[in-house]
Amino acid sequence: KKRHEYGYDTELVFHLSPGTPAMAAVWILIAKTRFPAVLIESSREHGVRVASVPFDIAVEYVPDLLRQAERTLERLAWGTAENDFPAFASIIHRSEIMHKVVTLARRVAYRSMPVLIEGESGTGKELFARAIHAASPRCKKPMVVINCGAIPAELVEAELFGHEKGAFTGAVGERIGHFEAADGGTIFLDEIGELPKAMQVKLLRTLQEGEIKRIGATKSKKVDIRVIAATNRTLIDEVSAGTFREDLFYRLAVAVIKLPPLRERAGDMNLLIDVFLGQINKPSSDRSGEKRFSVSARNVLLQHRWPGNIRELKNTITRAALLSIDGEVGEEEMRAALLPAPHAEKSPETILDQPFGPGFDLQKIINTVAVHYLERGMAENHNNKTNAAKTLGLPSYQTLTNWLKRYGLE
Picture (cartoon, rainbow, N blue to C red):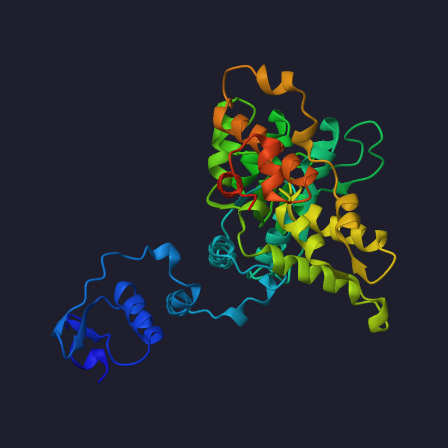
């Protein structure tokens, strides 16, 4: 009988004794997670009695399969399905943390609200911006991409809003700005934190009034645009430091999407490696020209911290494939393809003499030192944990394993 025929408040009882030990384990998992139930066991000697199982299973350890029904309900609640979002197909993932980020991005795509995307360099901020635009009702209109940090300060206003003929020396004709070019569509302001303070005021007015004014013009012009901004900084910290306007921050931060760094995307690494390697092998006309990674080469990738995130991973895989003279990329080629981590070049004085004040983070400094020496210890001992533990002055390889897990290097 199905449970709903008796009501969802009906007490369930699972009998453990019949069947194999594996079946008993399955009943215990079900009773401790999805469907709470009383467990009983029976024998000729003791009759029927309640089985004592003195533990509970944390939800974090329930296999991801059990969450599929919840995801299906979530999609139905929003009236969507996975194949309704082809725009997000290029975002390669299977980790839970990225699933949540992509789900949020899908939700905001349909709404013409401003979006602020925060994340380290190389985490895919522009990729998300393009996916949001492509999944939005504005997808038939243009998406204009602007790198705010790449425009000289004296040219920012002319680039964004345009100018009239004769507005300044060298303005031999009128020119529309990026905001006019994006009318009806989306404008993506990458590295918004680099925008000069004077332009932040003008941008705020544009967002509030929905109009722009060319340099030298006497009248404003209405524009219908959606703004997606991105930064590799934490913008609220920039507000606290006085380098970014608070009113503009709250105008932009209607929907905030925080992209996790690659080191926090447990479960995505092998998938990304296979996809990027497949892209390299795709142009090959025959199987003999394809590249493959040895187990040790793949382990090098899995143990790296990836400060440059996905961009660094893709470029490293490309370099390793070029360095390899035969079909298999080995550990030596992979290590040669890795670029030095930025934190590894910091001098002890840089670490030890950082000034106190806004942004000072003792735990971050400790993490930097620990990760540096753990990576060095493993690399210099060719990933032999017993030898690496001795090098690092740790009592055993089990202790080293605990340290590696603590700092996300295992």
